[in-house]
Image (cartoon, rainbow, N blue to C red; front, top):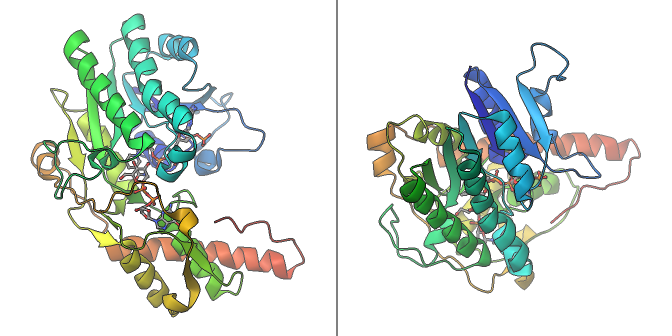
Length: 341
Ligand code: NAP
Ligand code: GDD
């Protein structure tokens, strides 16, 4: 039985990846942060109490800021594969918390690579690199496109990307950068734009809110489905040689197109509901991301399965169900606590 260690297992991608690896009969170990409220919603359906002999998923408290503990965990678990997904992953927030983002998103990767080097375990390492690193580089972007990062988040990811290449060359560690373009799902964090839109549109439809406040509607993104993208992570670590790969759909759409489509699908006019709030503008924006996944297709045999429309339908359906439950609770007299923007 192969053993995997996932940082960021409680996040969108971590939950899909844990599901994927458990289905492939892996023993899965995940790093989780101690919080005063539960932060394991996305993986609760996968959890079996560790006293049960059938348990195959184990969770370990820790933090990407603490190197000694990461080293101890790798020494104890000795994973065959490490998927490093943990990060402060919100671009807008990285302008508010640049130092923290550099520490966790940038140095966090170096801490793990150092833990591999010091423990000398035989393992394979996946780094969650990002299309955000391309920043203002003109599209289409592929593995040879020069990075022009436009945010503290992107700069931290560029640092991590280069550390992965350096440790691969200097210490012969099997380490890959997956340069993933935006990928979404019903499990997407509610402050990323796609989920913010599907959540608000469904709530507006059921009379739970009136307006949706957004920032720049002209930005364009190459949006895929997270469930498809985690398979590419795994495929990278099954190759004979480590390499870096762009993972994308090869299609781009504007935020305006996304919002218009969502509202149209549920029978609402977005222009009557959406207002622009400059609070959501970024000091420097990435105008257009459009990936060229030719290498992944050729070498990994990877292709996205879920298209743009299907992704939107999937997100609307899940959020409509959530809004219905919320409405039921409200009608039963519970207080509305679910109105985050
Ligand atoms: P996400 O939903 O925001 O999940 C981030 C994960 O990192 C969560 O499990 C979070 O734990 C954990 N984390 C944050 N700070 C940590 C710390 N100090 N110590 C330990 N764990 C910490 O992100 P995602 O969308 O799944 O993305 C996964 C990775 O891929 C991230 O590195 C992201 O930057 C990168 N990426 C994402 C996309 C995309 O479109 N989704 C595209 C390219 C690259 P809590 O649950 O406790 O907060
Ligand atoms: N979040 C957010 N909220 N974004 C908005 C809003 C809003 O109200 N209004 C417009 N946008 C625009 C942003 O300015 C950006 O151009 C675009 O919508 C997408 O924003 P996000 O959904 O926050 O994603 P992102 O592209 O900045 O970053 C995501 O993708 C990266 C890969 O390219 C994150 O998942 C990163 O972690 C990931 O690396």
